[in-house]
Amino acid sequence: MLRHASKMILGQGLRSPPTRAVAVGAGTPRMYHERVVDHYNNPRNVGSFDKNDPNVGTGLVGAPACGDVMKLQIRVDDDTGKIVDACFKTFGCGSAIASSSVATEWVKGKQTEEVLTIKNTEIAKHLSLPPVKLHCSMLAEDAIKAAVKDYESKRAKSNASEEAAPVEKAADA
Amino acid sequence: MWKKKLYSSTTLLTILLRTRKIPKIHSPNSVSHKNITLLDPLLQTSASFSSSSSSSPFVEIEGLSFPTVGGIFFGGPTFHRENVNLFTKKKNSFCSESKSAKKLQCWNCDATADGTTPFLVCQSCRSVQAVNHSINYFQILGVERKYNIEVEKLEGKYKNWQKKLHPDLVHSKSQREREYAAEQSARVINAYRTLTDPLSRAIYILKLENVVVDEEERITDPELLAEIMELREAVEEAEGNQALNQIKAQIQDKMQYWCKSFEDAFLNKKYEDAIASIQRMTYYKRANEEIIKKL
Image (tube, rainbow over all chains, first blue to last red):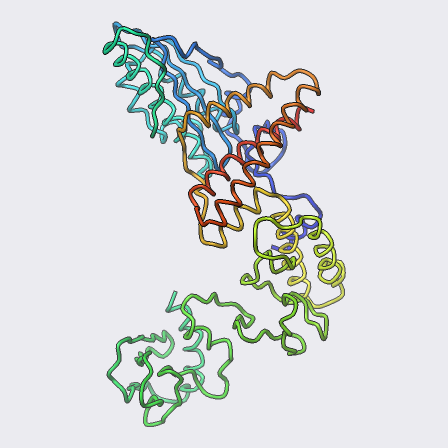
């Protein structure tokens, strides 16, 4: 406690939480798991699809307490219902980026119904996320569900009417 | 938690009953609406007394009457004043220093706090006092408890406090005082930092009203998220300091707008709106941090 207090006084400040995407070399006691670092250094599936494309479902979720925002997009084959491609864009900590990256990897090649069963606990386990970062994996799970929901509602709309359906985002998780 | 608190009182009991055989303690007033059972592991005695105000103020222990206050037996002359708080205030946090709201006393010279300034340092002997969490940050820095405070005034008060309780000033004093100085100083620093930054001030002032911003909440508001997404992308793609500064200025404007919005919501006790404002401010703050990193 004394040391903690003196650290504060010396201005070594603990103000900003160690959640910024900093490579492990910073030497902080809280380390990112190597898988997280890998996803951060070698990002896979970063990018954007055209959200007006009827085959694309876009899931946009955010964690306001930490200022994270995550976008996950899936491209679905209409005939088979299989997710043929996925991409993501996440602004947030390393764990959030890695979680969404893992999510895009896992949804590829699966059916839309199937990916709804992906649980945040699986993502968290895969990345060895510490308890304080579990909400990042929750965010990724939410993003997957939101993307599927968006795609489904687009399909429903285009089936219902002839006109081009506007993109409808899920209003609640 | 009850048992833990009561245990410290049982040690008094044990002192008093040390030479006695295991007594059965009966309260003369057995009719009560609340009963506290005291378990003393040393004596394996159980004493039960009523916590309601009993007409008979005495508890009988082996034929001896002991005075009680509010039906609760405190012990004899060795009774320490702090224990009043254990029984009279339910949610009082137990601390080695007296936390009674009525009288704050210096641990060193027993002078009472005069109540004009927050009791961080004794006026008479200048000893640093233990941290008292019931003194909030606004009180420490001597500003009104409202959102729209004058930030310039904070620095002066902060420095004044540090002149009195910085750990460097007490390095020749007792271990106890050095610890107090370290904790007290850290608390003052926290107070200063929390109140100078508009966002942390907003979160803190809500916390004082017992409205806590949920750390793990997730949102799917498409408009807000799309806006933030675009903002962050713009920051990422911006080339050159001019472009970045432009975006920074835009963010400043938005921050001011939402600070005002928070204040209005807070004053009208519309805490949902207040939290929404805080969320916005958090997002803008993050974007701002990214810009600063790039600059």
